[in-house]
Image 1 (tube, helix red, strand yellow):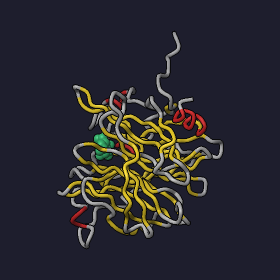
Image 2 (cartoon, protein in one colour):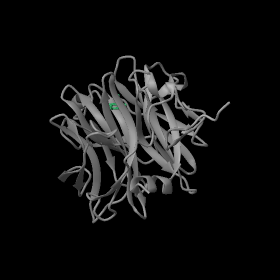
Image 3 (cartoon, rainbow, N blue to C red):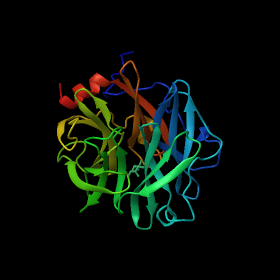
Length: 309
Ligand code: BMA
Protein backbone atom coordinates (compact mmCIF):
# COMPACT_ATOMS: atom_id res chain seq x y z
CA UNK A 1 0.00 0.00 0.00
CA UNK A 2 1.39 3.44 -0.85
CA UNK A 3 1.91 5.63 2.21
CA UNK A 4 -0.98 8.01 2.81
CA UNK A 5 0.32 11.57 2.51
CA UNK A 6 -0.51 13.92 5.36
CA UNK A 7 -1.64 17.11 3.65
CA UNK A 8 -1.82 19.19 6.82
CA UNK A 9 0.83 20.89 8.85
CA UNK A 10 -0.62 19.99 12.26
CA UNK A 11 -0.50 16.30 13.19
CA UNK A 12 -3.90 14.92 14.17
CA UNK A 13 -3.90 12.49 17.06
CA UNK A 14 -4.68 9.05 15.69
CA UNK A 15 -7.36 8.54 18.37
CA UNK A 16 -9.43 11.55 17.26
CA UNK A 17 -12.11 12.49 18.08
CA UNK A 18 -11.23 12.57 21.78
CA UNK A 19 -14.67 13.60 23.09
CA UNK A 20 -18.01 12.89 21.45
CA UNK A 21 -21.65 12.98 22.51
CA UNK A 22 -21.29 9.47 23.96
CA UNK A 23 -18.79 10.82 26.52
CA UNK A 24 -21.19 13.40 27.95
CA UNK A 25 -22.93 11.98 31.04
CA UNK A 26 -26.08 14.08 30.65
CA UNK A 27 -28.54 14.42 27.79
CA UNK A 28 -27.41 16.97 25.20
CA UNK A 29 -27.25 17.61 21.47
CA UNK A 30 -23.55 18.08 20.75
CA UNK A 31 -20.14 18.90 22.23
CA UNK A 32 -17.52 21.16 20.63
CA UNK A 33 -14.99 23.97 21.06
CA UNK A 34 -13.14 23.21 24.28
CA UNK A 35 -10.54 25.36 26.02
CA UNK A 36 -7.68 23.46 27.70
CA UNK A 37 -5.50 24.23 30.67
CA UNK A 38 -2.86 22.16 32.45
CA UNK A 39 -3.13 22.27 36.24
CA UNK A 40 -0.62 20.35 38.39
CA UNK A 41 0.30 18.11 35.47
CA UNK A 42 -3.32 17.22 34.67
CA UNK A 43 -5.44 18.51 31.82
CA UNK A 44 -8.76 20.26 32.14
CA UNK A 45 -10.90 21.03 29.13
CA UNK A 46 -13.80 23.44 29.45
CA UNK A 47 -16.28 22.29 26.85
CA UNK A 48 -19.09 23.96 25.03
CA UNK A 49 -22.02 21.56 25.15
CA UNK A 50 -25.22 22.35 23.29
CA UNK A 51 -28.33 21.07 25.03
CA UNK A 52 -31.32 19.63 23.26
CA UNK A 53 -33.14 22.92 23.92
CA UNK A 54 -30.68 24.44 21.42
CA UNK A 55 -28.51 26.63 23.59
CA UNK A 56 -25.03 25.99 24.98
CA UNK A 57 -23.58 25.54 28.46
CA UNK A 58 -20.11 24.58 29.74
CA UNK A 59 -18.96 21.22 31.07
CA UNK A 60 -15.56 20.20 32.41
CA UNK A 61 -13.49 17.26 31.19
CA UNK A 62 -10.40 15.89 32.95
CA UNK A 63 -7.44 13.90 31.71
CA UNK A 64 -4.07 12.62 32.89
CA UNK A 65 -2.47 12.50 29.44
CA UNK A 66 -4.24 15.17 27.40
CA UNK A 67 -5.86 12.59 25.15
CA UNK A 68 -8.21 10.46 27.25
CA UNK A 69 -10.82 12.59 28.98
CA UNK A 70 -13.63 11.97 31.45
CA UNK A 71 -16.44 14.51 31.57
CA UNK A 72 -17.88 15.62 34.94
CA UNK A 73 -21.40 14.43 35.73
CA UNK A 74 -22.92 17.92 35.76
CA UNK A 75 -22.35 21.13 33.75
CA UNK A 76 -20.15 23.71 35.49
CA UNK A 77 -21.62 26.88 33.97
CA UNK A 78 -25.11 27.37 32.59
CA UNK A 79 -26.78 30.60 31.41
CA UNK A 80 -27.95 32.59 34.42
CA UNK A 81 -31.68 33.24 34.54
CA UNK A 82 -31.72 36.07 37.08
CA UNK A 83 -29.58 39.14 37.68
CA UNK A 84 -27.80 41.58 35.36
CA UNK A 85 -26.22 38.96 33.08
CA UNK A 86 -29.40 36.99 32.45
CA UNK A 87 -30.86 38.93 29.53
CA UNK A 88 -27.59 38.65 27.62
CA UNK A 89 -27.30 34.87 28.13
CA UNK A 90 -30.82 33.91 27.06
CA UNK A 91 -29.52 32.02 24.02
CA UNK A 92 -26.66 30.42 25.90
CA UNK A 93 -22.95 30.72 26.59
CA UNK A 94 -20.42 29.65 23.96
CA UNK A 95 -16.76 29.12 23.09
CA UNK A 96 -14.86 29.57 26.38
CA UNK A 97 -11.18 30.61 26.32
CA UNK A 98 -9.13 30.27 29.50
CA UNK A 99 -6.16 32.44 30.49
CA UNK A 100 -4.20 32.10 33.74
CA UNK A 101 -2.98 35.36 35.33
CA UNK A 102 -1.55 35.44 38.87
CA UNK A 103 -3.30 32.28 40.06
CA UNK A 104 -6.71 33.19 38.62
CA UNK A 105 -8.19 31.49 35.57
CA UNK A 106 -10.10 34.03 33.52
CA UNK A 107 -12.67 32.71 31.07
CA UNK A 108 -13.71 34.86 28.13
CA UNK A 109 -16.81 33.52 26.39
CA UNK A 110 -19.67 34.51 24.13
CA UNK A 111 -22.93 35.44 25.81
CA UNK A 112 -25.76 35.05 23.28
CA UNK A 113 -29.10 36.85 23.32
CA UNK A 114 -31.62 38.32 20.89
CA UNK A 115 -29.20 41.23 20.43
CA UNK A 116 -26.48 38.90 19.19
CA UNK A 117 -23.15 37.79 20.66
CA UNK A 118 -21.33 39.77 23.38
CA UNK A 119 -18.08 38.94 25.12
CA UNK A 120 -18.33 38.16 28.82
CA UNK A 121 -15.60 37.46 31.36
CA UNK A 122 -15.74 35.14 34.35
CA UNK A 123 -13.11 33.80 36.74
CA UNK A 124 -12.33 30.72 38.77
CA UNK A 125 -9.50 29.73 41.07
CA UNK A 126 -10.31 26.06 41.39
CA UNK A 127 -12.71 25.07 38.57
CA UNK A 128 -15.32 24.47 41.27
CA UNK A 129 -16.65 27.97 41.85
CA UNK A 130 -17.11 30.28 38.86
CA UNK A 131 -17.82 33.98 39.17
CA UNK A 132 -19.00 36.28 36.42
CA UNK A 133 -17.09 39.58 36.28
CA UNK A 134 -18.56 41.68 33.46
CA UNK A 135 -19.90 41.90 29.94
CA UNK A 136 -17.01 43.52 28.12
CA UNK A 137 -18.28 44.21 24.61
CA UNK A 138 -21.38 45.41 22.87
CA UNK A 139 -23.28 43.00 20.56
CA UNK A 140 -21.72 41.78 17.33
CA UNK A 141 -18.54 40.64 19.01
CA UNK A 142 -17.11 37.20 19.88
CA UNK A 143 -13.82 35.24 19.92
CA UNK A 144 -12.39 37.14 22.90
CA UNK A 145 -8.99 35.96 24.14
CA UNK A 146 -6.99 37.47 26.99
CA UNK A 147 -3.20 37.76 26.93
CA UNK A 148 -1.61 35.83 29.84
CA UNK A 149 0.10 38.89 31.33
CA UNK A 150 -0.30 42.64 31.50
CA UNK A 151 1.61 44.54 28.83
CA UNK A 152 2.87 48.00 29.77
CA UNK A 153 0.66 47.81 32.86
CA UNK A 154 -2.54 46.97 31.00
CA UNK A 155 -4.62 43.87 30.36
CA UNK A 156 -4.85 43.15 26.64
CA UNK A 157 -7.40 41.19 24.67
CA UNK A 158 -8.13 40.23 21.08
CA UNK A 159 -11.65 39.89 19.76
CA UNK A 160 -13.72 39.91 16.61
CA UNK A 161 -16.29 42.65 16.17
CA UNK A 162 -18.25 42.57 12.92
CA UNK A 163 -18.72 45.70 10.89
CA UNK A 164 -20.24 45.66 7.41
CA UNK A 165 -20.11 41.83 7.57
CA UNK A 166 -16.32 41.90 7.83
CA UNK A 167 -14.98 40.00 10.83
CA UNK A 168 -11.40 40.92 11.72
CA UNK A 169 -9.17 40.57 14.77
CA UNK A 170 -9.05 43.67 16.95
CA UNK A 171 -7.01 44.53 20.04
CA UNK A 172 -8.24 46.38 23.18
CA UNK A 173 -6.72 47.41 26.50
CA UNK A 174 -7.97 47.65 30.06
CA UNK A 175 -6.79 48.68 33.51
CA UNK A 176 -9.26 46.48 35.38
CA UNK A 177 -10.62 43.80 32.97
CA UNK A 178 -14.01 45.57 33.04
CA UNK A 179 -13.57 48.83 31.13
CA UNK A 180 -11.89 48.44 27.73
CA UNK A 181 -10.66 50.95 25.17
CA UNK A 182 -8.10 51.96 22.53
CA UNK A 183 -9.72 49.45 20.14
CA UNK A 184 -7.70 48.87 16.98
CA UNK A 185 -7.96 46.45 14.08
CA UNK A 186 -4.78 44.36 13.66
CA UNK A 187 -5.50 41.42 11.34
CA UNK A 188 -8.05 41.30 8.53
CA UNK A 189 -9.31 38.67 6.09
CA UNK A 190 -7.08 38.24 3.02
CA UNK A 191 -8.61 38.31 -0.43
CA UNK A 192 -7.80 35.13 -2.33
CA UNK A 193 -6.61 33.18 0.72
CA UNK A 194 -8.04 30.41 2.93
CA UNK A 195 -8.95 33.16 5.44
CA UNK A 196 -10.64 35.45 2.91
CA UNK A 197 -14.09 35.81 4.48
CA UNK A 198 -13.67 36.25 8.24
CA UNK A 199 -11.03 35.67 10.86
CA UNK A 200 -11.10 35.51 14.65
CA UNK A 201 -8.75 34.76 17.53
CA UNK A 202 -8.81 31.11 18.57
CA UNK A 203 -6.29 30.38 21.34
CA UNK A 204 -5.17 32.88 23.98
CA UNK A 205 -1.80 34.25 22.75
CA UNK A 206 1.29 32.17 23.58
CA UNK A 207 4.45 34.05 24.61
CA UNK A 208 7.56 33.08 22.60
CA UNK A 209 10.94 34.71 22.07
CA UNK A 210 9.85 35.71 18.57
CA UNK A 211 6.60 37.36 19.67
CA UNK A 212 3.08 36.45 20.76
CA UNK A 213 1.95 33.45 18.78
CA UNK A 214 -1.74 33.75 17.97
CA UNK A 215 -3.49 30.64 16.69
CA UNK A 216 -6.52 31.99 14.87
CA UNK A 217 -9.33 30.69 12.67
CA UNK A 218 -10.07 31.78 9.14
CA UNK A 219 -13.17 31.24 7.04
CA UNK A 220 -13.50 30.90 3.30
CA UNK A 221 -16.91 30.76 1.67
CA UNK A 222 -17.75 28.32 -1.10
CA UNK A 223 -20.82 27.42 -3.14
CA UNK A 224 -21.75 24.90 -0.45
CA UNK A 225 -21.00 26.98 2.63
CA UNK A 226 -18.12 28.08 4.82
CA UNK A 227 -14.86 26.25 5.53
CA UNK A 228 -13.23 26.96 8.92
CA UNK A 229 -9.46 26.41 9.18
CA UNK A 230 -6.63 27.18 11.59
CA UNK A 231 -3.70 29.53 11.01
CA UNK A 232 -1.17 31.48 13.07
CA UNK A 233 0.40 34.91 13.33
CA UNK A 234 3.09 36.55 15.44
CA UNK A 235 2.50 39.80 17.31
CA UNK A 236 5.14 42.07 18.76
CA UNK A 237 5.94 41.28 22.41
CA UNK A 238 5.87 44.83 23.72
CA UNK A 239 3.33 46.25 21.25
CA UNK A 240 0.99 43.38 20.29
CA UNK A 241 -0.97 45.66 17.96
CA UNK A 242 2.01 45.23 15.58
CA UNK A 243 1.80 42.10 13.42
CA UNK A 244 5.27 40.67 12.84
CA UNK A 245 4.32 37.73 10.64
CA UNK A 246 1.39 35.64 9.42
CA UNK A 247 1.22 32.20 7.83
CA UNK A 248 0.11 32.03 4.22
CA UNK A 249 -1.12 28.45 4.30
CA UNK A 250 -3.64 27.03 6.75
CA UNK A 251 -2.24 24.77 9.46
CA UNK A 252 -5.21 22.40 9.49
CA UNK A 253 -8.16 22.01 7.13
CA UNK A 254 -11.28 19.86 7.49
CA UNK A 255 -10.40 16.54 5.83
CA UNK A 256 -11.39 13.69 8.13
CA UNK A 257 -15.05 12.61 8.22
CA UNK A 258 -15.50 13.99 11.74
CA UNK A 259 -14.29 17.42 10.56
CA UNK A 260 -16.30 17.32 7.34
CA UNK A 261 -19.68 16.15 8.54
CA UNK A 262 -21.64 17.19 11.60
CA UNK A 263 -24.06 19.85 12.81
CA UNK A 264 -22.02 22.36 10.82
CA UNK A 265 -19.94 20.79 8.06
CA UNK A 266 -16.28 21.61 7.35
CA UNK A 267 -15.36 23.22 10.64
CA UNK A 268 -12.12 23.17 12.58
CA UNK A 269 -12.44 25.63 15.46
CA UNK A 270 -9.84 25.86 18.23
CA UNK A 271 -10.36 27.57 21.59
CA UNK A 272 -6.96 26.95 23.13
CA UNK A 273 -3.68 25.08 23.25
CA UNK A 274 -1.32 23.59 25.83
CA UNK A 275 2.43 24.10 25.44
CA UNK A 276 4.32 21.13 26.91
CA UNK A 277 7.80 21.45 28.46
CA UNK A 278 9.11 19.57 25.38
CA UNK A 279 7.87 22.38 23.14
CA UNK A 280 5.02 20.31 21.79
CA UNK A 281 1.81 22.32 21.36
CA UNK A 282 -1.46 20.45 21.76
CA UNK A 283 -4.18 22.35 19.95
CA UNK A 284 -7.71 21.35 20.96
CA UNK A 285 -10.42 21.97 18.43
CA UNK A 286 -14.08 21.41 17.79
CA UNK A 287 -14.72 19.47 14.59
CA UNK A 288 -17.88 20.04 12.54
CA UNK A 289 -19.52 21.46 15.70
CA UNK A 290 -19.97 17.83 16.75
CA UNK A 291 -16.91 16.57 18.65
CA UNK A 292 -13.56 17.54 20.18
CA UNK A 293 -10.18 16.65 18.64
CA UNK A 294 -6.52 17.38 19.23
CA UNK A 295 -3.64 18.03 16.84
CA UNK A 296 -0.01 18.87 17.59
CA UNK A 297 3.09 20.69 16.32
CA UNK A 298 6.30 21.92 17.89
CA UNK A 299 6.21 25.53 19.03
CA UNK A 300 9.26 26.29 16.85
CA UNK A 301 7.52 24.83 13.83
CA UNK A 302 4.51 27.11 14.36
CA UNK A 303 6.76 30.15 14.67
CA UNK A 304 8.62 29.18 11.49
CA UNK A 305 5.28 28.67 9.79
CA UNK A 306 4.17 32.19 10.69
CA UNK A 307 7.52 33.55 9.52
CA UNK A 308 7.11 31.51 6.30
CA UNK A 309 10.56 29.97 6.73
C1 BMA B 1 -18.54 30.36 14.95
C2 BMA B 1 -18.77 30.04 16.41
C3 BMA B 1 -18.29 28.65 16.74
C4 BMA B 1 -18.69 27.61 15.72
C5 BMA B 1 -18.41 28.11 14.33
C6 BMA B 1 -18.86 27.13 13.24
O1 BMA B 1 -19.14 31.56 14.63
O2 BMA B 1 -20.14 30.13 16.70
O3 BMA B 1 -18.81 28.26 17.99
O4 BMA B 1 -17.95 26.44 15.95
O5 BMA B 1 -19.04 29.35 14.14
O6 BMA B 1 -20.23 26.89 13.30
